[in-house]
Image (cartoon, rainbow, N blue to C red):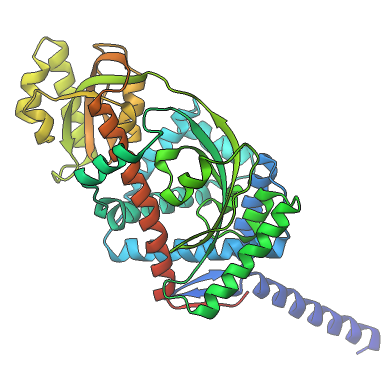
Length: 424
């Protein structure tokens, strides 16, 4: 065999081996999470996705290795919550996932095939997008089961809040950015000292004009870290007391001192303030609910409501049907009436449906987390804040505060109790 041919074969063999090694490298495991794993290719895919989102929002980009470190922690928490959802028997049938995707398409004024094509045109893998939506829904459902449904607010707590709050009657909102340096659930003095030192270093950089959003993406352990720590617009009553006491004394552009809670060390930035005391718009509505706990399929529940809606249009009494059929026992006894309420007290699907209706108009059947509904908007009014409205607003604010606090504790406990091995 000629030497040159032998050398060519050797070079070809080495090249093939190196290419094979590169392929393996792309799919190596970067984290073991209980009985599941996260691969480098999954991490790289999420990194590219988040990079595009950060660029689109104008958030300064951190170093890639720092971003991947943040993303890996986020993906570990997702794996833990998805695993708990699976073990708890929480499922998302294909039919329901298709309905959620159809609703997303409808919200963008597209049919589902058009929505799919739009994602493809943007370079988004539709099947991967579909799986991400599935995971988001499952994670939200296990959160509702493990956190939201376990939160309780007493009448005494609401009364105490109404007595002490100086903002309950105001519609002033604060746009906040947030950085959290979290502590393990049973942190040692050494761990606490180390985390406090990290927070102090970050605060010093912020006071030296470092970009808050970039620092949040790079270092925060908060839920909104990958959105630049953006908490959005919050009424002071919806903030933890630790935050609200400080925020009420801040001016636009101010950065808070380090705030210590059981979750860790927090830093806030006040981006903007808006609003003032306003009239509250209330709605008076009635509905018929067919619970998804009845064992019937979505098609059966929707079909039955379509029949009921047609009977109402033909002249049958809404209230009489609600008393006989609705699975919402509280309102059924009142002919389906819910009374005057702040629309924000309802779940988003119900609130959005009411917003689309004119007085006396009845909706088409729609689904919420409680089942299938038809709802009739009876009236709207602007209200100056009755005792009932103030009570409901305080109750909702306290409930959301507790949910946020309990969610931090829950996710931290999941992480501390899990087997996690990092290989990045």
